[in-house]
Image (cartoon, rainbow, N blue to C red; front, side, top):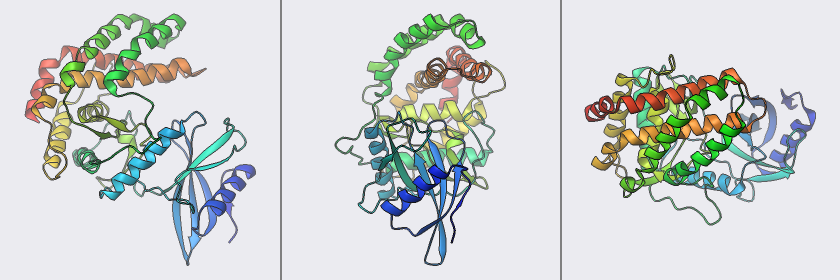
Length: 370
């Protein structure tokens, strides 16, 4: 069976063919297509024939700037989750020598000196949403919250393997680093729309960072578990109105459970129509209530504790600052970034920063209701 490649790049096609033949015993590679939509890495769908059937796989070519110890952390966590019964994440296909990571010479147009690859099972389902698209149905919101609870349950007992870790520090160690970084961005800011927006709100952002840092002691003692750290609608696959897959564990780490829940609420329940529109009350209580209810069904994760519920509002602000940091870093550290596109992101998170501060009492009532 002749290999069908839709890559329009003979060198890359040959590199992928050699990679699969030299490292895996899966069968004959018959088809390759690129999977579009990721921010950091390049991804490909592979069809491999064996024993009169064709199996589809997901091949990831990691960004040349990625740190190998972080990939090994991600792989170790995925294997651990699977061993604890979490079947909604794509399993890693081990190589012939049992490794999960393949090193090769760098393909053309891949800027690193070498390339890192990993092969995964292919997740079924439909990519229906993005991180800025929060128009899920009630059943989809409930399903997403239940998946997060199940993920947190299955993380129990995880221990980082030697030499595998997340470089980014835990959230309350990370937040204090933002101000110095933002001051540097302020110095390089020009007169683009994003620059003017950032400069106009710089004082409010710094005040929010100071407020966030003040909670470090009060957060101590809260539950720490392996978290996804990028749980948004765009990282889920659905079949009908049920979530059937979760992916992109690139940012996963061990941190406060409450941070993962707060970040999910910021992503899932944000209103994107207007800068200061805030969070959706019905979706907020639905998601949080479904998460807590699902936790009752699992033996290794409980609903949010009194301490966690008491501190959810400041953690929402911290989660929003975490996303704002991503907006600003990506905008100022990437040459020729689209000003209009990033204005919508930065404008949204700055608007949400103000909205959370103004509606703390309302948010407390939502938490009680959930």
